[in-house]
Picture 1: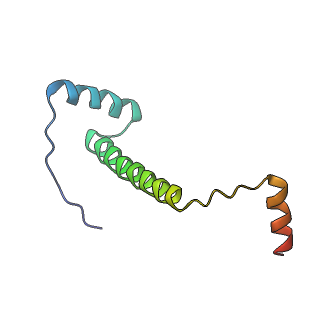
Picture 2: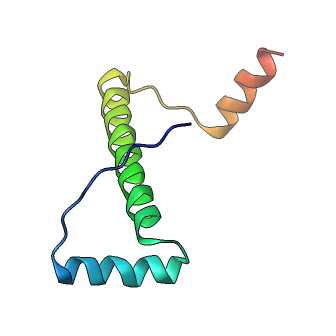
Length: 75
């Protein structure tokens, strides 16, 4: 897979803080930042999906016993 290179600007304090955590994680600075960006994107997608699920929620709730009975009926 091809990779693209970008430039991201951090002030010295931000850079030092990120570097400390990258070192603790045992990964290079750029890999730490890349993973953090991808995790943020995944978090935002999860929040969007949760919001959509709430919008589509019909308020139906089932006990565990009901779920087990429904599972048995479908077999």
